[in-house]
Amino acid sequence: MFTSSSHEGLVGRCLAEFAALRPSLLGASAALHEAVTARLTDDGLNYHVVQHRVKDAGSLERKLRRMGPDGSQKYGNGLAEIDDLVGLRVITYLEDDISRAMTALRGTFQQLEHVDKTFEQKSKGEFGYSGQHLVFQIGDTKVPAGCRPYAGLRFEVQFRTILQHAWAEFEHDVRYKGAGPVPPEVKRAFTLASGLIELADREFSAINALVAAQRAADQAAVAAEPDDELTAAVLQDLLEQALPEYPRSKTEHYEWLNSYLVANGVTTKSGAVDVLRDADWHFIAERMEYKFPAGQVRIVDDFLLEYWGEDYITRTAHLSTDPNRADKLRRRLARLHGNRSGSASLAS
Image (cartoon, rainbow, N blue to C red; front, side, top):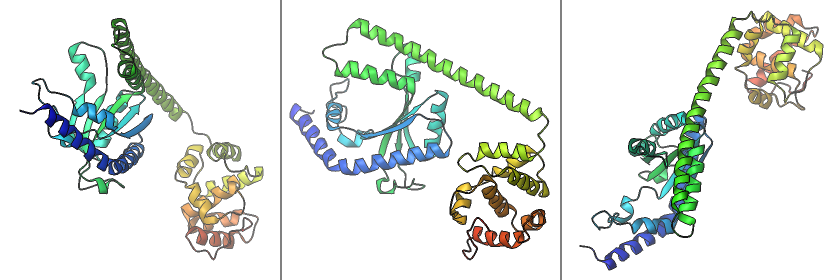
């Protein structure tokens, strides 16, 4: 049977242990934030923000002082039972995105526990706090970059929609930072707001599905239309959309570039889009070390040279009015392949 003094002693020891651990926990919190953000981004998930924090000492003390239903200490084993010393929150726009984000993180960390707060509310026929709480552990294998020093650490990730987050933050401020007990009419207002938020989240998901269906229909309609023949004017319009940060070239230069593409079997706008989709413009500019921003035609010409290599030279050198084009293209190709003996001059 524990005594009040033993309880106080446990709380004091835990807080002292936490103070010693805090610098390491701060490092782990930052590393996990980077790892979670990177995973969600790599998977192309649509999320609003990822938040992270280390539990503050006051909040930890209140948690350690909680008692179980039988009057015993709820966390009798101290910090070993606290899973949210480090916590993260993933806030999404849509409820559908929460399950995707949870799946992504399950592929990165070991899941220890899952509490579905949304299901708990619905199963009780009530409205209130909604969200998903998962407890993860940093494993010993396939550890994300920056997290290896913290292998074995348990941490909590909360998943909410942006509307659920707004409700929870406001409700927390009123309930825990207000003076005195919360009046019944305020509790009722929060319950009503929770129901409206659930409805709004549902409608946002429905809107998203409708928009996605419309986009698919629009794309199918475009695909069914005859493809535009590739002309200098069509090409110029395409490049002005694809390369707005690069200066426009002279009108006749687009005619030259169009003839180069046609010589390589690209005769439609969609064909040009397919080829240009593979372009890494930063790589081209970095390798060529342009002395001033390259015009749209020049950087595309360099990309096509890198894309088709020697075949591009064979197919296009004779189309130019420059008798030295073949030699210049070979020097440029050498530079694109990393040989700095080639000239970087735009005139070449």
